[in-house]
Image (cartoon, rainbow, N blue to C red):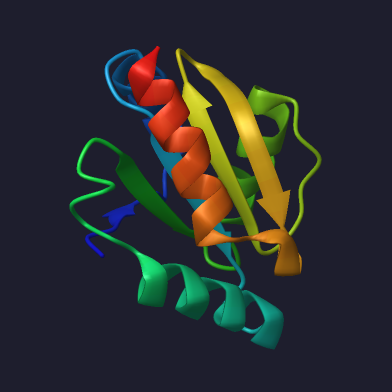
Length: 117
């Protein structure tokens, strides 16, 4: 899986612009949490590059970039959780899940549906 690093609040503007062309996946990861590590591992292990070729995945180390993590919650009007995955389309969060609810199959279904619209 080829993650783009998300660290700066200003990147949210670029993500919003990009999300008008491609769905964007944001993964908020707590590097000190075993549940977060398990969710990240499951996502990466199941990731299918061919199926997800039109999605731009971003990874946020929320412990290193707490203000950016908080800005994501505010910007997309989503309660902060960790770990957390969000899918951004046309500048809005169209899907979010956290903890053990982070599931590649569900994410892939949302992405495929968005690509058909």
